[in-house]
Image 1 (cartoon, rainbow, N blue to C red):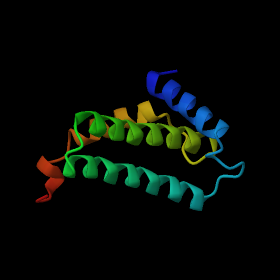
Image 2: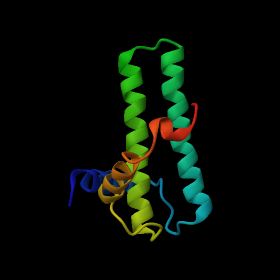
Image 3: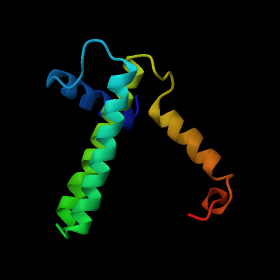
Image 4: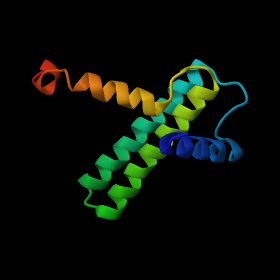
Length: 107
């Protein structure tokens, strides 16, 4: 097991223990979890915009990673994915190297 998988599983077990995951996971729940990651991203923007300091930015970035790893572990557990996050990152990184600058778009 890799570091990301281990960390994701740990974070997921904590989240489940704290009541953040229902017994039956469905598409609506997954969608809500994705939007919580978006919410954390907005919090990073606000920390920068409101000049809350480097520590606030770092903590909000940590929240994004925590929610993302928790969600991926939950996706694996619920059968939404059947590839490790490490493998998905490796494959996507390899593919991105073949793409043109800015992936062919202006911004």
